[in-house]
Amino acid sequence: SQTIHQWPATLVQPVGSPLSLECTVEGTSNPNLYWYRQAAGRGLQLLFYSVGIGQISSEVPQNLSASRPQDRQFILSSKKLLLSDSGFYLCAWSSTAISYEQYFGPGTRLTVT
Amino acid sequence: EDQVTQSPEALRLQEGESSSLNCSYTVSGLRGLFWYRQDPGKGPEFLFTLYSAGEEKEKERLKATLTKKESFLHITAPKPEDSATYLCAVPSFVTDKLIFGTGTRLQVFP
Image (cartoon, rainbow over all chains, first blue to last red; front, side, top):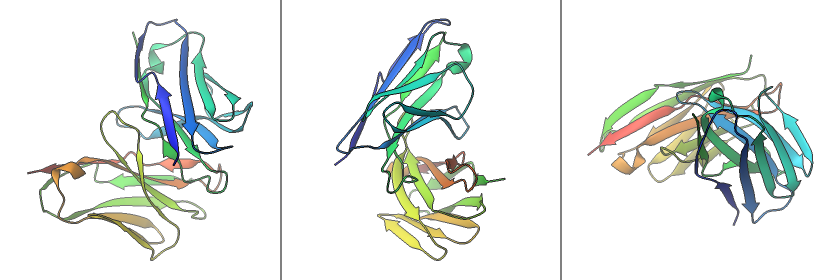
């Protein structure tokens, strides 16, 4: 069965510091991968998605970037965090065959102070 | 514009008191409607996929139904462990990305 991991689970970072969140998927190959942000009381906002190694599409212009160095690894980064980057970050995967049926990881709670 | 609206925002039920959550959608062409359950501080857990009007899916005390304009998540005789936020989503016909509603926060009291 497929499993998706995210770490760290929680993170408190000062403004201006760098960020690296990691997501890995097990039990499947060549998945579509997604990064979402969820703000309190709001829907999930798609940030980035990837259909393959090195292929990243950005949905929202922002202070963040994403990379996919390996087939089942997806990384969310920032060089300098802003207060507005605080939120709950979720990684998700889907198969290429059923791309709309997405499965989420446990999430990372990021607080920028 | 593609849109998903969920109602009510919050719902408080007594244990055993059945009710329904609504997900209204506006998309040019429906390519599936997805229900998720999200517990506080956790990622959404996939529940159901519905593809066509009239389709129904069941899981324990939950039953999801679909019409051409909306979906309902019926909760029969809920228990406190059913307390969670329930999200629905549809793929945008324009952008091909999932559009999520803001969810219904369900609280079931013993």
